[in-house]
Amino acid sequence: MTETASDNTTSVKSMDDIMALCKRRGFIYQASEIYGGVNGFWDYGPLGAQLKKNLRDAWWTDVVMKGCNGKLGPDGKPVSIVPLDSSIIQNPKVWEASGHVGGFNDPMVDCRETKSRYRADHILCMGVKGDDSGQIYAFIENDDKSFDGALKKLSKYKKADIAKDGVDICSFTDLGPDEIAITVGPDAKEVGTLTEPRAFNLMFKTVLGATGNAEDNGAYLRPETAQGIFINFKNVVDTTRVSVPFGIAQTGKAFRNEVTPRNFTFRSREFEQMEIEFFCHPDESKAWYTFWRDWRMAWWQELGLEGENLILREHDNDELAHYAKEGAGTADIEYMFPFTAPGYGELEGIADRTNFDLKQHAEHSKTKLDYFDNTRGELAKNGQPKGERYLPHVIEPSAGLDRGVLALLCEAYTPDENRPSGVFMKFHPRIAPIKAAVFPLVKKDGMPEIAEPLYNELRNRFGHLGTIEYDVKQSIGKRYARMDEAGCPFCFTIDSTTLEDQTVTVRHRDTLDQERIAIDKVGDFLAEKLGF
RNA sequence: GCGGGUGUAGCUCAAUGGUAGAGCGUCAGCCUUCCAAGCUGAAUGUUGACGGUUCGAGUCCGUUCACCCGCUCCA
Image 1 (spheres, rainbow, N blue to C red):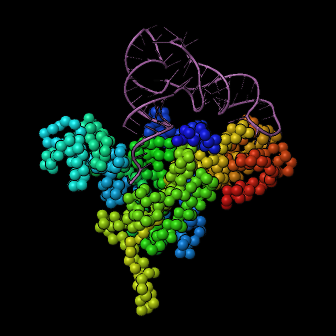
Image 2: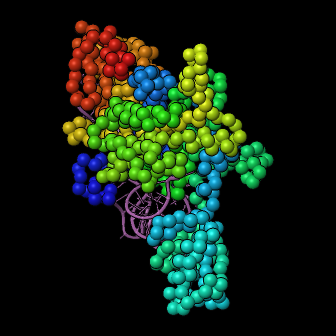
Image 3: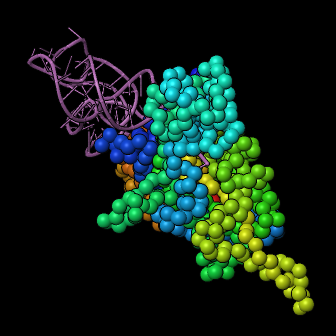
């Protein structure tokens, strides 16, 4: 579908071109490239590292420090969020409680026809007793209906009425590839639609201790940052002065051993998440879900992902995750990447996780995770509420940082035949890795002597936000072209007029317009453009 | 995991089984007064990796790794 889309739609950008620019300009490299690379991992170069930091910082500032940029919650009060930085490796029981180990540690069998997935050790197979010729019929263990179905199909196949005790039964896991090829799956009509058993645990395993072994000292790299928040819920409630509703936020690496890493950094095995777990009273979860869904969408739009490339999509009931019960909301913020067009790829998911996670951890850890809310409950004689004890519900806006960076790169990539570079990166100034460049028009007549102090001034004032570039080499056009590909929004050029009236040229990346401003106003100009 | 395709300098690509090259970019110097100008010079490759055939392999064969496309997968 991608092929036809790029062939027929001129508006779809070329992913190959974007990847080439990322390499050429130092945004993203293949990990371990000089050793031939390693599937599913990527390194961020100088510009990419700063771009990624700027996006992470924007999220941290807007979400955590400013509490949704000061937008009031559905309760009419400021949104309360506290930060957290939990460990990548946790007690393995965390992942049992969360459901990451149990259901997904065992070899699984897929049916290509019915699209069902079974645990391999839960499937049994039957054939006519003493007759090992012909097709094998699979059914689900301890499922009479499934057994009867298989027996019926076997009878039809053998053109004989076969009794319940007239069959040999063996485990599916004992079958070889040749036998699987002649096996008919549960509820399947065709033969050979079952896959061989495959382990589907996507968690990275590691060993604790220098002399440890995998059996006794095995541990997992976290497959998501969320659980680190849930298991610290009690700590945060006990040691800080938060009260429900409030959120805990963290950014950090997570690891999933994806079967097929694909599409540049979109699906990689090591990735960084930006997650909020927002705890609220069960009665208010719907209002908070709506609040977060809409505000997160608006946030991405503010960073430059405007227009039709970004959509908000509510999940259908049949694609709800294991933790989201029916009826509770789940929505994706999706971006139309060149490799998904005309479809979309997930950037952030907003899910009503109900009290699933806290309940699981309360049970597995045998720790009380109830929250005592002294603003609720009926009034006591003294007029104060008696309080209410409950397990908070959780709204989870979970964003992929690497995917965000990729979306920003794709969105920024703008071919333009009318400029020497042929392309420029239209980053929002707040996100741009290089904030500004200072250029003496030529390397003489005292221009460098004026440009250098300006460079130092801007670097001191804005260096914490990103790179300030200074370059005296080669023609001015070449320097502008380089800044176009790096996505630097503003270039300040010192020329002969500067020597006379202390003004500099501001060169705007997007419009190629030039204007003159006083050299001592450059800092304020940049501050305003960067939103400070 | 399955099927198809591709790997030569930072990028785009050449090279009949016979000396690994060009353009662009990069770097240095000169020049240059607003959009990759010009001149001079320089650096850059175990031809993805390993093995085989051959007097001789970028080229042929095998294996492997990585990337791209389609399935599969994405809790």
